[in-house]
Image 1 (cartoon, rainbow, N blue to C red):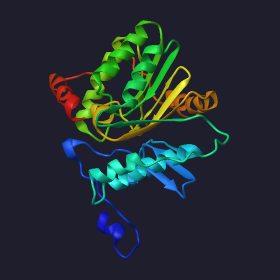
Image 2: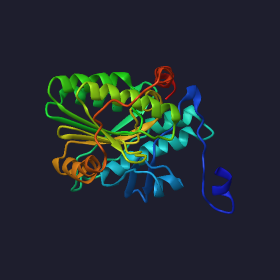
Image 3: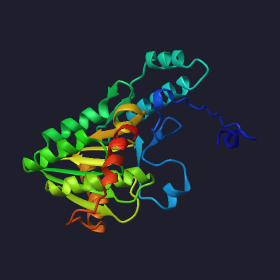
Image 4: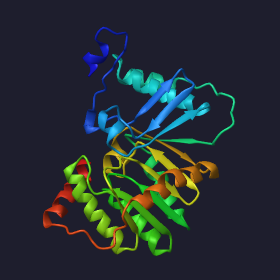
Length: 273
């Protein structure tokens, strides 16, 4: 891919190393420092034609923050490596005048930085009315346990999850997670196809972006989510994504048959994915 992009062009490409089995899972596009697109989509045929996925178009001061994160990543992948990363972190960010729009917050995951994980755990614990989640990879046991606790205190918890994913072990792990949720009163909707969307609404707070509900996304990989409590944004996300997908996805009413090997696969998946 790098050779293809650089061949007979002026495209600059840097490949990032993946030390300690971590990776950069962020998907961001920044155009002229004015417009940014972030979400779950990679550049590939299946994302455009086959899978259910979502990106957000962003403008305003948040684009400057996204551009800074890209610059840090670009420097880190350069010849200076960690020194380039430190230099990027030390650089200042000029504040742009606030424009009309939604108040947004960037949440990041990286080694030692679990903003996406911690914010969503706290959101689950504080929820009093409803929790709506759509995610393709549901392997984090603590997140699942907190959702069960939320349901037990009366919160309306609904989850949209695909039963067929691009990773066989995750597919079987999703089966076990769906059964646990169903047994504990959580409403589970099986998306008809592969949904790669990563989005959630906790009462009046929305969180969406690149992070899965798995160990890699919540603790190891570089991830980027956007969060907001703006009522207009939350309502738009519910109407355009969750209401549509709840209607299109059959609700699970009986446990899905599992196998003894699924429990072994799930144990391994907890540490690999």
